[in-house]
Image 1 (cartoon, rainbow, N blue to C red):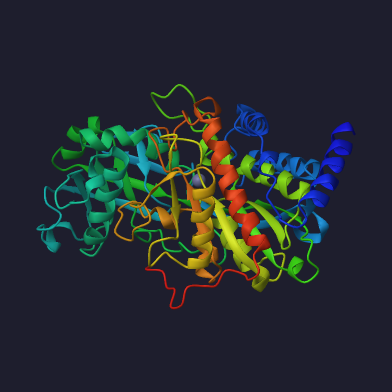
Image 2 (image 1 turned 30 degrees about the horizontal axis):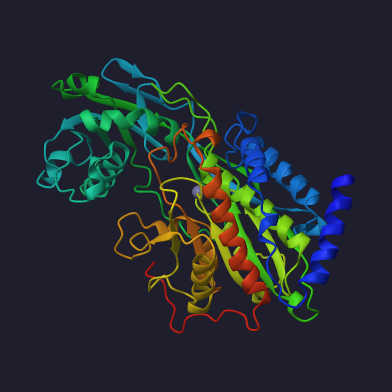
Length: 490
Ligand SMILES: [Zn+2]
C-alpha cells in the first residue's frame, strides 16, 4: 500500500507542477525496475515463453499482473487485460515411418521431414549431381536424392549454416517437383550438417497459421515430402538400386495464444479518445533440446523481454503523468511464429482502429555497442510518417543521442529486418509506425540470449527514448500524418 500512496502523491505533485510544460517525467523510468523485471521475465521459470503453450500464457498472466500493479487499466476483451486468438498448428505426426533400404530412420533423431505433408512413397532412389540439368525422364515418378550444394546460390548469407540449408532446399525443391518426382531426399554436406540439429528442433514443431496471416504461403510443396538425412547416410542413399519406403502423416491442432492489452487514459477530453500504441512481443522460442548445446531454454532476454519490461516502465511513467492522448500498451503473443499477435490486433483492435495515432514498436533493445541503435520506418519505402520520425529523431537528439544505423532500414538490406517485427501489420493498415531496435547479435535466437548479457544501462536509455517519443506524440497538437503515397515493397 505504501507504494501506491507514494506514487499517488508523486503523481499529484507532477500534475500540478508541470501541467503547463507537460515535461515527461523521464526519471520515472528506472534502471532498477527494468533490471528486476528483465531478470524475472527472462528467467527459466517461464521456459522461453513459446507461443501456443502454457508458458506463454503464464508469462502473459505475469505481465498483466505487473501492468495492474503499475496502475494501468485493462484494455483487452470484456474488461480484461487479455485478447485471445487461435493459432492453427500443423505438424508431422510421430506415426510417420521412413525406411531407406532395410534401415529405419527415427524422426528428428536421424531424419528431418522439412514441412508437413501427407504421402505414401515406395519408389526407387535416383541419386543426382545437378538438379538443373537432370532430365525429367530420369527422375519422374522416383525419389530423387542429392547432396546439399552451394551451386547457384549467390546470397551473402549462404555461409551461415542454417540459412544455407534453407536456401538450398528452397532453391531445388520446386524445380525438382516440377519434374514429377515422388519425394526429395537431401543429404547433408559439411555445412548443412552443422544446421541439421537446429532444423530437427524447428521442423518438429510444424507450421503455424492464423486467419489473416501476412505470411500465408510458407509451404514449398504440397504432399511431395522433403526428407533430409545426415551426412553419414550418403553411402546408403547412393547404393545402386536403393529404395525409399515412407508413410508421412500430418496432424493439425488449434491452440490459444494471447495479446496482453492495457491503457492509461489521456487527460484531454477530446484527445483521450486517441491512442499512442506502445508495442512489443512477449513470446520467444521455448525449450529446444539442440544436439551439442547444453542449455535448452531459449530465454529471449533481448528478444523480447527487453521491450516487454520497457513497456511496463513506460506504463508506470504514463500512470505518474498521463499525456493528453491515451497510451495503449500491447504485449503481442506469437510474434516469433509469424507476427500473429500484431496481425490479429491490427485486424481486431480493442479500440477503434482510426483512434490509433501511432505505433511505437520495439524488438531487442539491450545489446550491441552502447552508443548505437536503429530506428526503422525512416527510409522510403518504409517511411510511413515523417511527422512521427521527426519526433523520434528530436527525442534522440535531446536525450540518449544514439548513433543511428542507416543500413538495416533499407529495402536493399538482405535481412529484411523491417518486416520482422510487430509494427509491420500496423503499417500495412496505414497507421504511422516506427520500430526501435538495437539489432541482432551473435546470441540472437540462441539459448545464450540471457538476462545477464543485457546492457541494462543501454536498455534504460532505449526505454526512455521510446517513452519520450510516445509522450511527445501523446501531447502534440496534431496526430502524425501518414506519408503521402506510402506503399511498402512487400
Ligand atoms: Zn523479437
